[in-house]
Length: 598
Image (cartoon, rainbow, N blue to C red):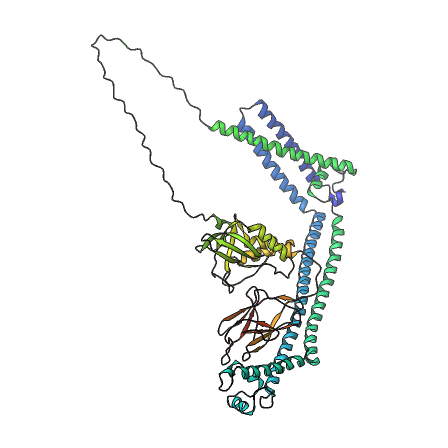
């Protein structure tokens, strides 16, 4: 046979390797035979059996390493390794490109939202300036106000109340202005305001609108070009990968087993014979490993048994007593000492609090308040009603997570998952830093039967990780689990067709401190449930709880006292807005997050 004959997709017949393979397998078979003889015919030679097995293992390792090094240096093997390395690099490029394309898609969606928000804010600013200018321009002196004549108008002017913008509840403190006249002035201002509301611009000036739209369009165009560039690169990588895979297909027969088979059996071209020879080779190697393993265990056990010292029997010489006629000595019986066992009383431990629930997660804060209770009601996916051991019932908000609200997808599934976990079950509440949120709900981590409920909801994909400082002990844990859940596309992370961008945004568009009302508007593109929302006078910290739904494009007037005409009344009996100092109106959503301020 030629020294460098080519077989098996480019593996060459190497005379040196062939001789070594045959010598190695021959020695293996010889050592197996010797091991059988030592085991079955010379069982007392456990040491020799162990030595034979040890030599066989060294022989196998040494021959295997030497042959693999020679195999690695074959040119065709180097070529295959080069293609494998190239394929790995291409796959990394493909993965990186996919990540970049995904980021660009998210940025494009955010771009549209930002454009809508900027347009809405710009329109709010125009509305504010239009109404403020209109109220200031509507003079009391020329106004047709029922029951308010020139003298009263002069008195108002003397007190700095000149236009509709200056009218507020403060006029009720002026001499000569009873309830009827105060109401007449407020009604006149309301009519002026209503007229201004009906005539205010409903869109931005074309130039301003075009400037905003063009700016965001340029951003989208740049992002689109970048995405197309990445997509082109992805296609190119796909073509490169296809070419590399085609080249690798030529090396399917290039492997270490075929190398050994080629140098053991030579050029076998028949497919059946090739498979049979490979099976024989693997069987011999596998049989050798099994036999050496078994014999090694047997010989090691025998050596251990043999190493235990056996007891040595020493013969004892017994002397026959010689009778001596002497007086008999009577030995008094010796006293018997009876040992007395004194039982030490066992130690009874004092019962302590069971703190095993801390084992559910290392992130849970230690040395903090924990309480036990029973869940009596499920409010939604992240809020529950709990009856504590003292008999009192509290509303509890889960720390660090946020479940879908009633108008959002997966609200029902999230609430049901929460119910399945905790409803009517005994739970443990663990405090972080804050006691309650602004809605007086207890802020807690929740454990039930060694299940960390906050974490479990994120893991199931029915809540998202949200950080609300200072309660951040488990923020990193929640975030890490969310990354795994998002990658697994579970629950709310299930991949769906990308919908048109939508956003919910309710903003404060005007504050009239003198008339004691605030206007809010839904400038988003979905209706918003105002349940659990709050409007707060920041200076005086007066809070007005809202309810109902505000539809897209609707403006809602919120009165501090009783609603006058259409609108929502907070029911305060006195003024809440400070007219002489800065007193912003702040709007909070159901999660207690500030969404607008004016």
